[in-house]
Image (spheres, rainbow, N blue to C red):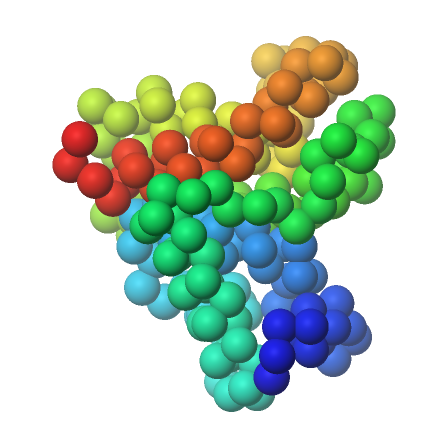
Length: 179
């Protein structure tokens, strides 16, 4: 299965258990940048990975490997949407929101405390700052007063959106290097 066929599948009704292509990109990105998520395919397909065609699983694995190689080379992962075209007045129907939902799904996929991105006192604040755009755009904490304030400010949201690609690299380095 080539990449275009994978994207078509992910965005079709045949994809019963997975996320859209944009949300899958977010999920895969988070599964790479954060702590190791051993059963990432299980989480991605909500425990139904056995019902997903092997060619789909292989294509997703290849996509993930390509994203990981980019980060290992300290190159930014290009987001699958144009940040400049985001309508910050309708954020919940935007592609950045869709991508962020996938990212946050992977961040919080595991109930295992060893997988908790925020469990290290030395890096907890950095992780919080670097993931703030994804948390904001995912809508997970939209009822929090500080998030509501950010959502009312299109200029701040634009700045946060433009920082995502850099933040992804920073998160990867934070979790995967000794420096």
